[in-house]
Length: 150
Image 1 (cartoon, rainbow, N blue to C red):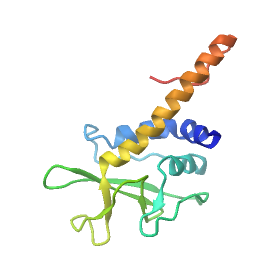
Image 2: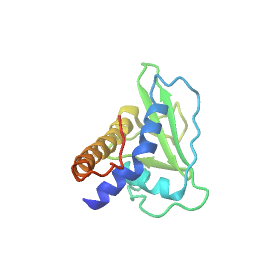
Image 3: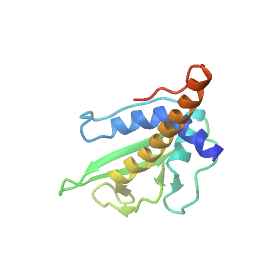
Image 4: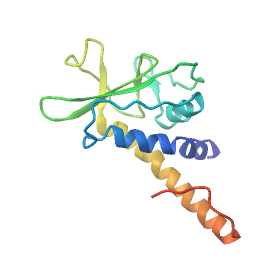
């Protein structure tokens, strides 16, 4: 759909950066990224973000000063988990199964880090597919393509 195409292309760069920063091989304790409301809205859409407690979609325009936070954790078995917060509210991502994590905090809701990475990769792949399609169309017409990816 056109809405899906817009989401994929709008969120592509941020999703790639976020995916790299939450990778276990990243090695940094924290990463801070700055953006605008026009960056956050496609991100919320791509992640299919919902309030974790009520499952209400976060499809409203982000207010000024919004914060999107991904906290990552490793349990005693070495399994990686994450908690996603938007303006301090717990967020469920896509179809990820949420669970309470008493080791993180009394009211922490976490999902497997793989679930968040899967949701990101789905939209990164969609952007690549669109970019390749557009590149083929534009190259045949002799014009320069707007998309450049790896």
